[in-house]
Length: 238
Picture 1: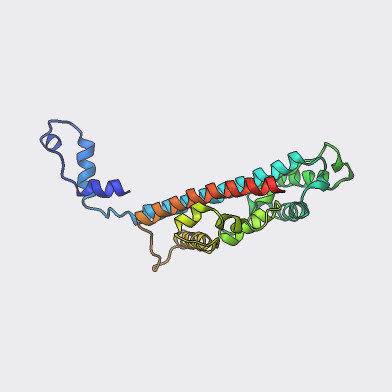
Picture 2: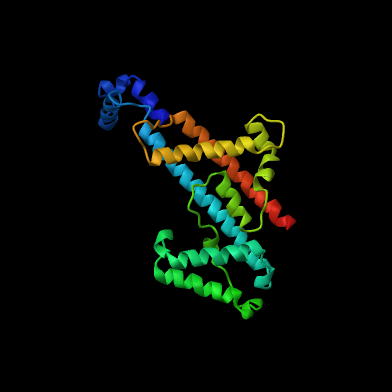
């Protein structure tokens, strides 16, 4: 986007304007670019929606991977964290009652119920049980800081933000000296709040500029890497 903005303000090279080099599409694009808004607020807003969606997908995949790892390390279902087993029951029943609400059909919901029945049956102490880890990651909210906490708690990881706050990379990014995660939490909530406003715009909605969205991309890159590291540490400690 920044490149397009700069492109619109540049002068057409002599070689092109004199047709020494044939590149009509570039000349046409340049002529059009000078007549439109090159800050491209709608495009910047669309990209913000996209990166928020990718971050939400990443967190769910990460939590799902932790759940699958716990299953692989447990000899019986009873060894799984109690909060994890409770969430599996609750979320499975929610999907079974209203599968379309969560993007499933009735057959898929029935398969989730079958997996749950094997999990809670006496035979679950043997090798005939498994879990549907995607059930654990279902949410109805955007990935704000509270939703993120809730997801990690479902697999037995408490205080995920406290672990994030301890990381040197976060302290450098926010120019802070303490271990408080408040800056990182506030930034995530701000991004997701703006995401909601862009997804449901009104006449008063302000779209972000290019530099702001690029800053959000850097934040997501940073926080994603730290979440992976913090998850690995929490898993090793458990």
